[in-house]
Amino acid sequence: MSSFLETSSKHRILSSMGNVAVFFAAYVGLSVERISRETGVDPVSLMDPDAYLTENFYENFFNLLIKDFPERNVALELAQLAPLSYFGTPGRLLLRAPDAKTMLEMFVDNCDLLADRLKMEAVDGSSTETFLCASQPLDEIVNGVSQEIGLGLGVRVVRECFSEGLLAHVQFRHKARGPISAYEELFRVPVKFQAESNALVFKTKELDRLNRRGRPKLRCSLEQRLQRFRQEIGLEQPDGIADIRRMAVCNAIRGDYSVSGLARSLGMSLSSLQRRMPSGVSACSLLGEIRYVNAMGMLTDNNLSIDEVAFRLGFESERGFRKAFRRWSGKSPSEARREMTQPDPPSIHS
Image (cartoon, rainbow, N blue to C red; front, top):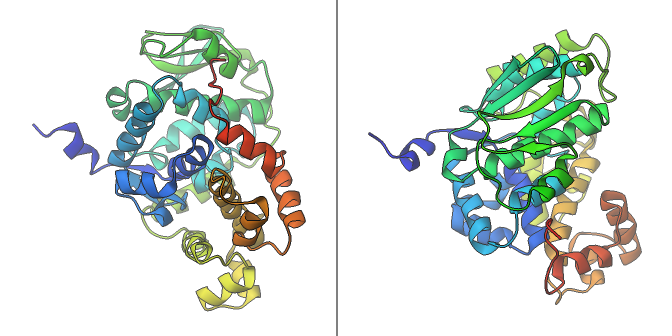
């Protein structure tokens, strides 16, 4: 019988979590270079949310976090800090479902776009509760870390799209990996452990609630776009943004964050570049995402002044960088640096 390590190398998970890894690494002080070295994945792949990484990458990354930060519940911290924009094309489409019930159904039908061995099932637990159960073989290896991250991000999506009051409780199959109060602080509902399944438990009567980010009567269009993505899984996206993002990351490594430089590297005009971008996404916003992640990494290095970070990120002035960083994070670069580089960073338990 093959070992899990052998099996996991054949299976894939959407690399949006790889983006989350880069973001969180910057927060806790791990370099992208170290993640790349210890997982065997190059930085460009980590920055492409519509590519796929093997389960081995996530096993190695989660174990790295657990080893380096044994006193912190890194799963809960990661789920709390990860940008919701890093969900890749499947996530962006699923989050536009018109109502809660449709969103649950579409996640169940398309969960294999997120990870080929991820299983989701909506179960009527009673007349008052509906369970969205999730299982993934990787979770048995990393002691519940992947489910805590997944359900934590799921709860944030629910709050973003439907506000409070939709969830009844959350449950996990494993034992709590720290104080239960830390879980309830993130999930804001009761959290149960050593349950029969990992699940977000919804109030059935609330499932007709409209999505603040969705559009009425949009399901047919969303399903068609998801089907197109499914047909091209493992290839470039239908809109070609995967190749554009990959080139943008390569340019960023050289210090070029300009739209004109990106177009030139792709061998196209500025107008052609914008036509290839998905609806609602600009090349400028794409470069802004990459700049933000790189800024977080650079700010962990106290040897770099704020002005030097601004220069390396291609800003003409420190003032411009500060303005952009506050737009990205709601904080100044100095505030973010203090949070990330203080001698004893507060954990989510504190």
